[in-house]
Length: 305
Image (cartoon, rainbow, N blue to C red; front, side, top):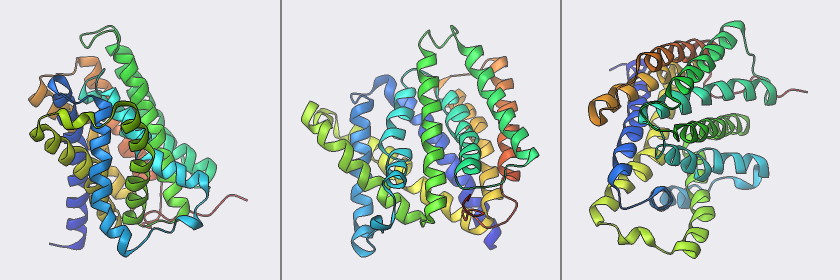
C-alpha cells in the first residue's frame, strides 16, 4: 500500500473513531451507572496512564510554552473539551454532536488561525465556513422543541463550546510547532492533574461503584480511543497527506455520525436536519480543502507583526 493510501486510511479511521465515540457515548449515557463527571475521570486516568511511558522517555518541553498556550492545549483537547462534548450528549443526539463539534471547530479554527497566527483565509475557505455556520444553524433551529426534548439547546451550546476549545487547541499546537505525541501527552497528563483532585475531593472515587465491565468499556472508549488513539491516528494521516487533504476527511464526520446514530440508536434525522448536515458537510469539505494551500501539515505561514 502506498504512502498516500496509508494516509487516507489513517484519516478516515480517525473520523470513524470520532463518529463511533459520539454514538457509543450517547448509547451508554442512556443506561449508564456513571454520569458525565465520572466518565471524564475515567477518561483521563486512562489517558494519563497510557501517555506516562512516553513522557518518561521523552519529557514534553513545557518550559518553552507560554501559559496561555499550555492552557489552550490542556483545556482545548482535554478536560474542558471533554466535559462540554460528553455533557452535550446527555441533552442532544449523537448526530448533533457530529454535526456541530467538529465542523464548528473548523470554523473557529479558520478564524482564530487567521487572526492569531496569520494564516490566509481565502474566498473559498470563507464561503465554506459560512456554509458550515448555516448548516449548524439549520440543525439547531429545526430541533428546538422537537422530538429530542426542550433541553436540546443546552447540548448545542456545549457542542459549540467544545468546537471553540478544539480550535484553540489546534491553533496553539500549530503556533508552538508541537509534535502529535507531545501535544497528546501534555493534554492527557495535564487534564488528569487538573480534573482528578477536585473530583476526588468533592465526590470521591465514585466511578469505582460501577460494574467493572462498564468501567473497562468507558476507559477504552474515552481514554484509549477518544483522548489518545484517534488524535494520534489522525496525525499520521496529516503527516502523509498534508493538512488540506487530511482535514477534508473530517467533512464525513456529520454524515458518518448520523448514519451510525440512526442504525445503533434509532435517532433518525428529520428532513431539515438532514439538509442542514448536507450543507454543513459541503462547507467543511470546501473550507478544509482550501484553507491551507501548501501541503505542509501544521506549519503556520508566519506570525503577524
